[in-house]
Length: 384
Ligand SMILES: NC(=O)c1ccc[n+]([C@@H]2O[C@H](COP(=O)([O-])OP(=O)(O)OC[C@H]3O[C@@H](n4cnc5c(N)ncnc54)[C@H](O)[C@@H]3O)[C@@H](O)[C@H]2O)c1
Image (cartoon, rainbow, N blue to C red; front, side):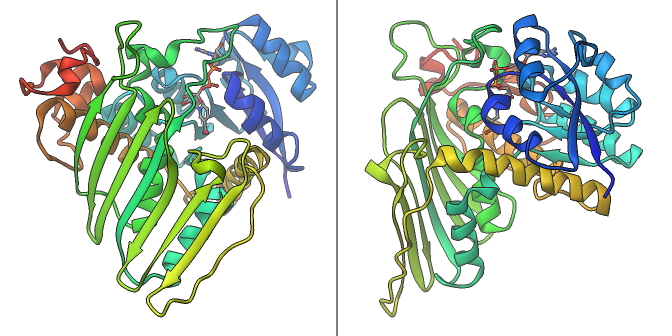
């Protein structure tokens, strides 16, 4: 098979534990050029990928100008995604985009329409699709082990608030430029819910607050509690930076399943899966053996994303998470923020003329706020 030559734009933390193992292990995917605005990160990337000086660039446009680059992975913070991806599409490159896809749904729609018009593949790094525990949950639900999925409860209350790369802007996740806080950062829970139900969300209601950052004025949320309506049932998604419980429960018409990491942690970064049981109404239990730790599987999940992206380009088919899935996850996330500010159930997809569809969280300031909104009381998203 012909090797896929790729360029990388943004060489921060997600590259170190995610894209690096993928791009150094797949024999027919080769990183040939790298751009980062900081010299220190370019040098780190040079060492990881054994690149020549001539393959390192401060300006991403030089990566796009290289005829040998067939696809790019865009791993910069989301506020920069639109400009870079539109330029990459204009240069005829296939796109693998980190999550979230963009700052605002309107930007996502623009990028997707442009890529489609050029016949280019647009895939998302929705890598949790390849975590063994989620694959198993999906397989069990799809096989009918618990009947029809009715209620899905997903706890991620102990998300670790990791800073960005020290050589860049470690605090960028706590600025309006990030487009949102913990829910935006852990949008994995959002797209997984859609995947497990097998259909797009129709409605969302949420409380969105910043109760734990009392030492400084918060800019984005650190707690988001969502109820989401899908055609077949409901998901409760509980997302928080700090300390708290993790794990997934799925209740169906004929049984239920649950997954817990050791000590009920949110993601088992260093912990194995402790409990993984499925019980149908005939009371047959399927306990599953302990799995590898998250850190061992996270690199593998990115490798699978890359292998799928490579094959999708070759086979001219969508990836496991095409750009449209990225746009829907972004709209559900922003819909939750809107619900927190207005106290109303938000219907999805958002209307294309809605200020939040157009401007992301910056559009929140144009929305008629609910006086008792905790989102507004927290003073986040520029709401006062
Ligand atoms: N899929 C996942 O599990 C996962 C995990 C972590 C982060 N991410 C996503 O990856 C993105 C980056 O996150 P991170 O944790 O690596 O952040 P980071 O701050 O560690 O790295 C960002 C990098 O982008 C570079 N950069 C910024 N602007 C640039 C530009 N215009 N051109 C080239 N380089 C530029 C910075 O110098 C820095 O090296 C975010 O969108 C984040 O949501 C995804």
